[in-house]
Image 1: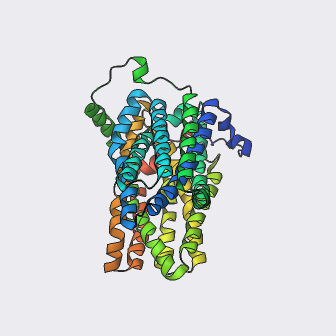
Image 2: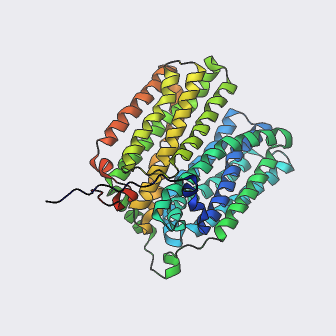
Image 3: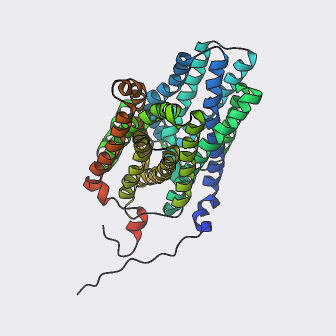
Length: 429
């Protein structure tokens, strides 16, 4: 009679274990460069906004400039995935950092020279967006090549998420002080320097060669896109969670970003209160990232989808007209769950897609997740005007609960197991 093998109880990881991925040369170099460039990138939007306003622009002009950054990202994402899979992620990211370095340096220069025309700012921010559109698909494809141990991949993604979260808290605060005292040009000059640090770190990496370096014959761009799309849609768990993310950005996050400040102005105390809410969201993401170090759920997608329930909390708090303290606490919890979700989804994708199409799959995932966001930003205000702010935010919160339940009903989501769980003795498939 066969006896059931009990899973081996692993010792609880220490802080040193959780940070051991930083001892790997490639990842350590990349982490330092990426964290530095992130800090600059989080400062730049504050400087750009005040550059437009200081040049005599208003809300409409600011909208044009901000949109000129988002639109190129969406347009070049798919091409960015193809190029990264063909040439190698490191090369593409290095080129993107150099492009953004030149762009931000040029923007700083034209601001120092006087008041630039609107078209110049739109053009410079658009080129900045092109660089980001090529950088993003390559990022998720590069990280697995920087970590020698698969078990360290989750910790690597967690640390990168921590860097993103910390930059969203520290970057705008520093940018506000610099913009007020030295002007927007100084902030953009600092941003250019941070891209130089990121490019230097990328240049020092030693990663496996890609097709362009091994001599493999590339297919046409359309053929490679079809191949990436085929790999993407063949994984039900992947496209299902991507649809969930896309509808979250449309129905939950975009209305929250538009109607949240409006609600804060009307009854929570204004900009200072809204700043507190968003700061606690960022702080929650830092705490969630710290909590994820060394933790690898056996069923990562189940844990991630359950984590998305936290995203309903801030919208629900605003819809229920809760006081500032409870709204801020809801944002803190949402930030915590956001860090967990990001780490688990990213790691699961990296571990379960072929390396040769990883960047293209990332580009389809990013496009699906973000393409509807601008629509939500545009429609949230008019719809709230015809119904009510509470109705729009409340619908978003309820949608998030229903969407999580629907995704959890997908068998491939429930069955997906983490790499650690698959490798444990006695683990069932």
